Image (cartoon, rainbow, N blue to C red; front, side):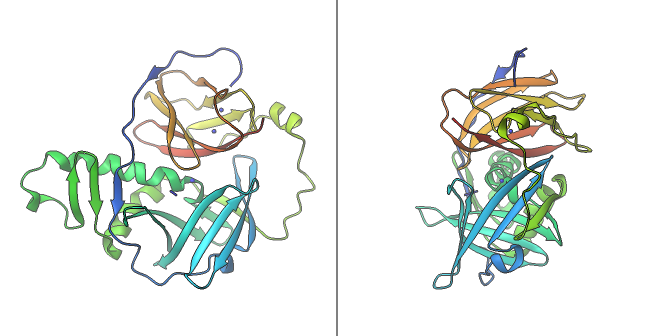
Length: 282
């Protein structure tokens, strides 16, 4: 699946190792698959923090799957999508037969969670780790089938999914959905984009990203926070590439080892957890 950057003045960061993603659901969300292009359009754009990201949906009726790709043709999601009580659940089947699931809210031209597909399962894993030390198992939540080292398995049930994903969605901010027909006549060159500051979003940890698109390095400017902030750089598949915890208001990621493509930066200070998209163009 399963939805950011610096120049000069690199700040000291403390590297932290991160376990792989070993949390999954045993089944897809138990609702009939839908054609998401009927809701968002075959071609659409997500606008976040002053940046506009284009996407395309192909729907395959035979197995009810939605293939979502970005402007480079890279796959962002490939699987079935179900809708339940105003939330869209994205189901990605793993090789072992289990599923990764992510949630999205859509309210007119506002969308929440779409750019954080690959972070949501990591967030769930972090929240469920505490049950490993709880004995006996009868004290676990009813939806928790397994909670051991490198194996957390969740029973896919409507109410449980709603309870698990609701807190995640509440922490996210709405982005703007622009459906097919958007005229990009106000887009500027990459060179000009690098010089433009990205407007600060209210209650946002990530104040600005520069440059974006980036080549060899990027600076992430953070809003003031009384807590330390953990920054994680992931590829579009959700794999962790770099992770640091800082007490400063900016940090420089070295992007030299990474090829062109779409990446995700996650910022977490314990109270807020948000993601931004980064494009690397070489």
